[in-house]
Amino acid sequence: MKVRIGVDMRLWGDSIGVGHLPQLEMLAFLGYEGVAVPLAGQGLSELKLLRVALTDLDLVPLATTIIPAEFNPIDASERVRKRAVDYLKQRVDEAVELGSEVLCGGLFQAQGQLSGVPPTDREWDWSRRCLREVGEHAAGYGVKLGLEFQSRFDAHLVNTAAEAARMCREIDLDNVGVLYNTFHAHLEEFNPARALPAAGERLLMVHLSESHRGELGRGQVQWHETFATLDFLDYYGWLVVQALGVAASGDADSAHIWRERFDSREQLCADAIGLVQQTLRLQRE
Image (cartoon, rainbow, N blue to C red):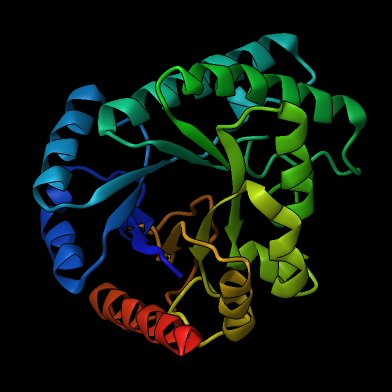
């Protein structure tokens, strides 16, 4: 497999900027080629400075975002849905300033805003229309949208790779694809050998996240099956290590992390890239 390995900067929180230069230098030294940067109101000037820092370190930025409740693309209010389109277009513009060619996340609905009932055709159509408009805007800048299907605890509209692929097909834009996250897949899919092929040619990116969101290889995710299937599919995109820690403030965050499943962030990153590289070598042999 010809892949590139990155790491999600949410390991250090949602507000990432040039103040994280020591962490970025450490990741570049370890051999990571890119970093997923959450767009969380940093401001254009901060994003430009971060872009320069990443360029100097030869790290590729991969923009991510989370949709808050007030910008829900599937809200019953037309006014809120219009605001959702504007919100996501602004995130695309920020991704461009950062130098990212992708914008990834659960872009189809606001995270954690569950209706309490199964998804409706109307909600599906609202989301599709929103993403079609945002996708057309992104295409003008050469930006791809990565739809990350999420578990039933975070979303109710798109929970599997097959559903994400269906949404991509119905949006019908070449720059909209599927982000496969092993954490969500562990909760919602039967196994990687069935889930990954369901994404088909729409598979854009893979996030490597353990079942407890901590150190890779010490949880319940089917890593051997995941890599074997990616090899079978001849996948050559990004593999992004994703682990999350307790919010710096100690308050609740969107991922609901109450305890950390790793000894240190630095050790986690070193062990993770070693695990991925070793597994890739074994798959090639």
